[in-house]
Image 1: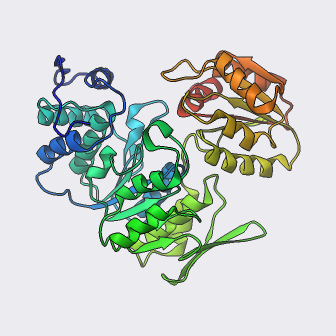
Image 2 (image 1 turned 45 degrees about the vertical axis):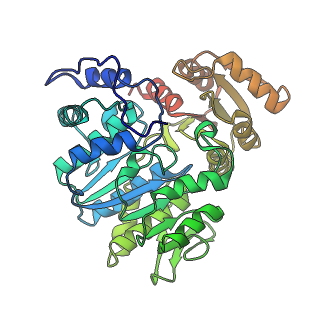
Length: 433
């Protein structure tokens, strides 16, 4: 990987002032030769041109294999409920690019996003930026322009070399470390953990939301003298007949967590982070904030009779959480009908094995998007995983949703999952959104 900024060749003409958001997004897709190009040299160069001094406000950076979006949504809502002016940056989006940047819970306007893109374009000169790098810097510009007090930033991939990491975190959260994005991060939890731990900063507090952190994370915590609060060691989740209580002895705080359809470990980590940032925060404010969290695509219910849910989970770790959630609902009776469509680099066999015990009927779909697995290839992977279990195969998620709803009884449950593309298409099919 080059140590110096790389010029675009040939340089394409940027959209003019006042061009539409869609024109800018098309431009972003075309100006760098690869979609993913990890490294901070290019983005740091442009970042320094945009920000002569660190922006005002606290930086909360969230990394992890799964649960990042849930943690971002929860901590942002809590801080907003506490009266803070909060911005978030997440990726990818489901339907509109504006979903990636929110100010106090509201997606950014097209005009503000375009203005930020124009600022980045002027600053980058001959530096070639990926779509994600360009969008990340634009998100920072937009948040600075809005004057937000808390910047809640979700890492896109890994941590150490992700564009988000040009910002120095005042508080870091690592939700989980598991195997995903093998081509970029490797297939070893210690190696992946080292990448995630790249968001840590010397002496700055951090939260680790899982029970078994890799040694590499703990080594970085020790080396950088990071005050870490860790699930199972520094705070606990206690389940008594379905009532989950979060207890943190070091902060002398406890809270009953509301039952919301998000990973409890991410929710708990968000509460811990909020307590570290706002020590006097009232428990009722936190509980009320959590009940208001809405995170499209995360075990989101779209319809009744039969119930239709969607979930963006796309790896075995996320599939295991989804299976546990489905098992709880299955106790009411009825069959679980699963619509599955995924991207080519995912552990399809691992995902199927995690969900196989709770799924009664499979509907396999192709995805017509970059890196989408075709229906035929998915059928082959499914047969390899199950030894030839029956499944209905469709060439689109839209068709799979229609067939599953037609075949389902009122008491059945339909779940469409496997990627953001899967969820976006299923939401359109059910709600026309």
